[in-house]
Length: 369
Image (cartoon, rainbow, N blue to C red; front, side, top):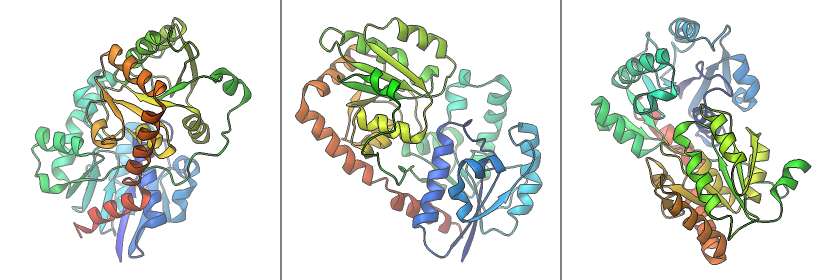
């Protein structure tokens, strides 16, 4: 029996973006599909347990106190969390850092190097801390997990670690598929109309590049006057600019904000295309969700996105609105091409199935025991 403890004390539900979905989906996959000789426990807050009750199916050690405060959390990781993980064969820190007190059998997941590559997305205090903590943790870890080979290569290159200690453990889609009839409220459903729908699920941060997509759909206004662009996701650093640009768009833009998972699945089912022009992704979970749901994907040819989609999407320069307009228009106008992308996307998504994800993560744990 291998005793594994997943440290999620850093995870504030709803506040850490894609890393929350990555960690919870992988652990859910191990709980559901992992081998019987893995004894998994989770360490985290009560808020985490309430937000993701599926994690309660294994041993859950609750850490009390204001874990959303960095100073308190760092102290708790070196005291309470250290004590709760003392008997583990493997301690997996999914938050990119290893605490000051470590066991020597630590695994760390580095989701990306955004604090180093895009420092303007972070406060000065946070980026200075992460600029120190990320390389320190990578060099101290027995094993480093990354969601893509692209992140693995950047970790090896920038931190000078041994490539043999870096494992690529991609994300996975949720086990439940898109509903047959989505739970869209009347106002949202009516706002989508009867014409083609392009969906972009992303927080409004600068690197998500909403502007190029808004420029692209404006170029399609004459040939596709009933086109609707749907922008979901939490408000980010440029939300006001995106809102203003959306109001000035020549096509209809619907912005429901961050939506619950069932609503997003319903929107994926309704959409003709998921367009994903982000300039920087360590993985790009929304494109995997789109492929799994049977929605055609047009994505940026940047960072990890080409690796995730393979040949199952159209890839476009993230900063060329004319190319985006041409790609989106070609998928909308050519049903055969759209169906081909949908079929290729479903096949590609199965390479990231929960069973495959669980196997890869458990293999990583076994490699250091």
